[in-house]
Length: 377
Image (cartoon, rainbow, N blue to C red; front, side, top):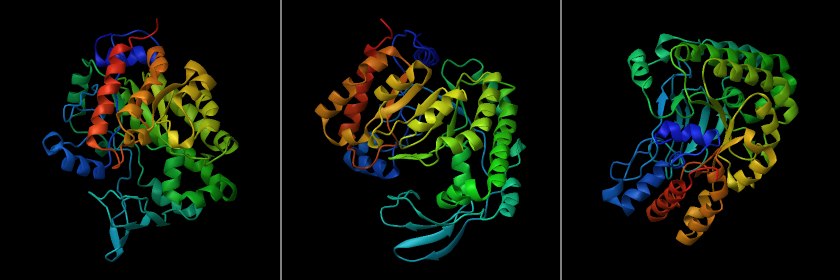
């Protein structure tokens, strides 16, 4: 297994290969700004878009089928209020936020925006959302899709359906529509609406993915959910089982029937209570295993076994503590790296308190571990 595709599949199936895959997620714009000050020659053109080699950092190749799973048409962005400290605006999702200006880089904030209003308040508001999510419109696919597919048919690297955070999941999208607090109440106050919303969104994802998957299979698909925080999930297993699980299972069954090898779910925080339901629905991977939430890949492997593949788990906070701490932390993952079913990456995007020197040391030390781990012995 000496190609990026072969290494990925071997890792996911707990088989041997010449080394393990080398993946990462990304970095904050503020981090890139810091690194350009610290190493201007190395980082001058650094953008970090999840799969390319940049600044001498060789990551394994992945390519993404760029499907537009968002609103068509989007809401019209509008600035509602602005002063020296913050801006209040409606974005393309119809969400009104108050955002602090200090520390912003390229529109990315140093802290979460305050959400003031969302487009769905009552059940009748959902009709305007549905008209913006018409499945399989031609505009949802690149004009040269067939030419790309011809090239991808000869690939020796993983192909992913949708770019990062393109196909946001059931909870994620409902939260965008309604806001966290209103969504939490809606499962009890508007259960009919919530059943409709989940069924509609599963149908939308299936029918928008179908034109691609009927032409080419992919290695994996990621459903971004972010339905947990440090103390646990934002919805309980009962709510997930009633409203989300049947449609998640139907979605996974569709993908796998159309050649998708693995389905991954992304959630920050601690989603442990929901993992059994995700596994029952056919999900293969949960990531990024956020260490500040007191979870770890070692813990999840002991609890869920090999049926759950793991991506992430490298504590971003350790990268601020120097080379010895980084080296010791990475060594903890060696048994999992050798076993397979685990791809170590930083447990989210890299924040600006991480220096360029520490990041480069992390990447070099991790690569050495991956190169030395050929798999089961």
